[in-house]
Length: 322
Image (cartoon, rainbow, N blue to C red; front, side, top):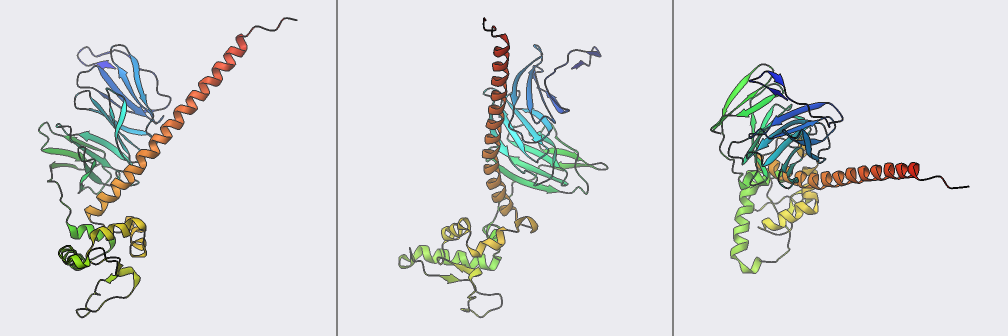
């Protein structure tokens, strides 16, 4: 730590066991957050020059660390494309976004001045906006032709900057995207016309009491087929006419209508609604995975300390008298 007015060295903070990749000073200048290749994020007391807390919830090298909402939260990104948010008061992990940019390493994150949005950039040439209140992806922003190195908000929060190795972009905050029902059905490989047909049948099923609860199969017409003609292949078969709930149940059950579609989602140009749903599912699973890994690391550290203590006690034990 150095003093700019005095142009002099102030203090050094030792604790990381590998290369340091990121560090940030809190707005009050009383705390420092750092991260590096040892896969830990550390919170430091500036005045006492001591480590207040070490966070083991990351499974890869840390690429960026920032404070948010004053000194209240810590945001960190990592090489495995994860974003973690901790509460400084309780030292608890509050939010985790796994594979936030797919397989691409995140290079930097920036917290909105209001504290409700996070802007992230990565080697995949994308900027992404994350809604912290809803806990989900809000926007994906394209424009760079090269990996993005940095991003930052202006003081008003209405604009932000991003840069790659050659170009700097100045952006306006985009409006929140509202996924349509047609976009949602696109996850399952259905077309807009098929979605409209399902909406009509759903309305009919809701108004006609005689059709409620029936499990008779229904089919979706083929493209270009005459009215009433149906495709008898199982890929287009639904369990209940006009029931969106049954379609969702079929999705979670992995029936044939959806199995071939979900397997290659990463290779298709999916609608934003599909990406949102997949990001949420992967994030929830990654949270559990990272928590379990953190517990295992702490247990291993405790076992190692216990073994060292036993060895020390054995050495200090008096030799038996002859």
